[in-house]
Length: 478
Length: 93
Ligand SMILES: [Zn+2]
Image (cartoon, rainbow over all chains, first blue to last red; front, side):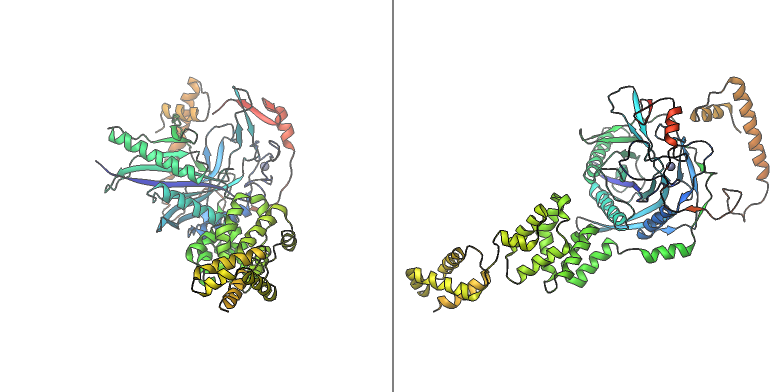
């Protein structure tokens, strides 16, 4: 039986976090009443001129620098012509033959393997408006043009990926980078980071690519994997059955777990691109690129390597902690604030508890500032509270926003480390259990646990276990 | 050489309805334009970079500052159909 190899190339549309649209001064703010973020330009009224947003260009250059692209001195905006009700002008302004960034790459890691994925290009373009189909009427759609003309960059990869896991690793890495650069909020569900996948298969060893299908409408990393898995199986079955893959666009139906053909309309891809006469070529001088290069923040890979090296935490911890920029910052601030606490201990608390909290209750997680984490860690370090108590306190901070000291008081969470108080209790425990004491001294070492338990019980579970152990050890030996 | 079929196809893509006589006329006109371009091809342009615009001016860029605009109310008013501040169009999927 023939074994096949999967070939995947991805096209990502990332919405840029500018305040205004790409060719006009309308706000890009999300969630405004329909059509209120519009003007003559983005409504496509006749006789208006688009003027390019400097910030959008800077963001595109930043994305290019972070993905090792060569930034083009000259790039040209072109019109992509097609008719659709969400596109008021009858064309989308995009870049075609001369995009702003060419030939980059992204290093990814998946299943413990490293791989370099090539980037073909990054170009700038405007987004379309939004159509609403579900207003109860079966024969009309409602058009909202607030999103029309919002700046996008399209990042096109080489067909370098060989499986669904690789594809999602690439996407995550790309998303993390754009979020680190603070140029895109990377939200797949809300559509600020969208992905189309070109998928084909070929018999292992064959050089020529098979016929590809383009997959659309996958709004989560998980769905990208599922859609590709499904598509590969579909193409394999088709070929093994003696059929042929037809080049087409297919839409992913997450509910049914299948992809469906979007009936390729006649001449669907005849966009008749030509340079937009309203926009002059974009010239990016080297000095501008160099200035932006200096402003580039530390990216996830660099940060992860630095965390491992400077703080001596395991590379795996460093990678997990740096995937999200906010988490990385939170952690590093906590390490600095909790001077004297080993970074590994700080990392453990995040890995075993705080990351889960952040995921489960993102709304209230922000109450746990890095200085609160440091405060709680110092208390454990000093033996005032146990690690279990520390976690309980942090949960309570997130839930109620109360101060750590107050929570400790209310819950009576003070760990007794006062040796005098503990000695007194230990003496009492030994006096109350003469038989066990004699047995222990006679060689029954196992009874140590019994004495620890009795002492802790008498202290209401609040004693510092290390101090209790030390005192018991001393007194039991007599 | 532009054929009548090419003109029909372009017209269809541009949503233009052309009469028989228009089709004839535009086929002829487009061929004349192409003939002029052919003439220009006789010039040696090897050393000249392709131009997309007649003037080479540095691109004017705009700062990222919001300006409000209320033209939408007038636009909705003259649009063929609108509802609840949306444009209303025949169903598309
Ligand atoms: Zn506008």
